Amino acid sequence: MVSRTLMGVWVALDFLLLVAGALSVALSIVWRAPNILMNMVLSSADLTAGTILGVALLVTFVISVGAIIQRNHVTIGLVILNWTLLVDAIGVLVVGSFVWMYTLKERANFHVLWAEATPASRVFLQDKFKCCGYFNGTDLAEVGGSFCTSQDVINGLNPNVTSNFCVTPVTAFADVTLNNVYGFMAIVLCLLLASICVIKKRNEDERFKKIDAKRGGRGFV
Image 1 (cartoon, one colour):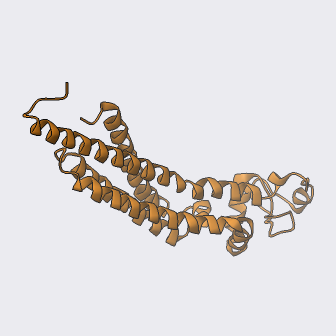
Image 2 (tube, one colour; image 1 turned 180 degrees about the vertical axis):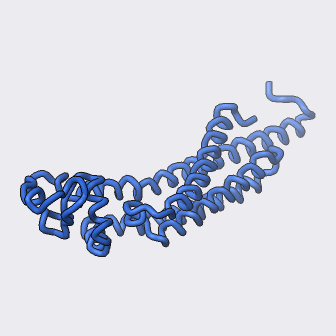
Image 3 (cartoon, one colour; image 1 turned 60 degrees about the vertical axis):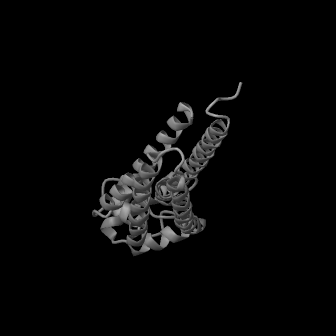
């Protein structure tokens, strides 16, 4: 019989899969709302990928419920689940790879987005992060708002303090937001390993039942 500990771990991981899928779909919808910073960090393609990934995880959860409630000798459901988890892992890997490649030139990539932003958007971000300009005070800095109130204020910023300029806080926010996709991989792979263990244990139980049946229903001494 599959141990309670193993089943407890499996159920916990399956619940995390449900949470991950629901969170991915929910955030992909919520983050489509007008938000200057979030719209800069996440493109429409990113949010679409997040929605697809979330739906895939939710479908996998439904499959997992059907698989685990089968009788012990029926493991085909868990086998299908494992193949589904492998597909999910590949999906997470693909999305994560695109994110990783983007972050290799993150500072330069966001400089392009900073340049494409409207002056009002740059003022908003400067006020939010208490910074002026992107790489420095002369790099697309906007006079206005509550922080960069004048050119003298911008010129007076210490060039050795990186937080005075927006490249550091903007990319730091982007790092936290974009890199969370890798957390899904841990859930998927751990559930895959747990499912393999459940299959192995169920097969062992069935094998011993058959041995007992051949011995006339008597167990081992």
